[in-house]
Length: 192
Picture 1 (cartoon, one colour):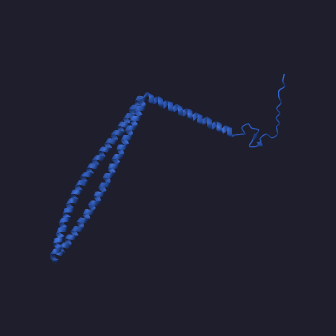
Picture 2: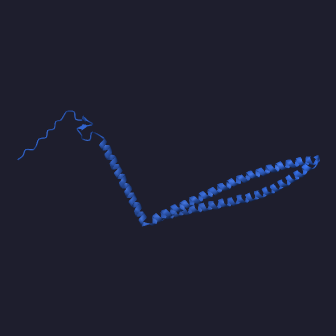
């Protein structure tokens, strides 16, 4: 019977460990995918930034030219505004991806902590099951708890019994509890 319990416990812990490992691997794959997407977005941002710089240089040259070129400058400024909006959108996307990455890291840490805790509990349980001294100690603790519970019940029962009545006194709190007065005389015993 104990062998089956140990086998079931080991199977459960192995299943829990396997589940944690599979979950961890899937989170790592997702993290890798997000990191790859982040690299691609950074490349796009760099490209947009270089384009933005080139447009700024073009705008400076166009400001020095005549009014006909200034009309063309207006179109370039509109284009720059659109690219800037795209750049801001890309920055928001990066911030969201960073938040998601940190969330995944936290989840990974939580899973690692849970796995570590489960492993510690498994080791403790195996140590208790395999150690005769630990089993004896556990039995002693149980016997001690049973004795303490019995003593507590006896004290509780005695306390409830002693609270009822006048506890055998004829005078209680300075008043007589007996309806008539009793006179007790003590005489010495006759000597022989």
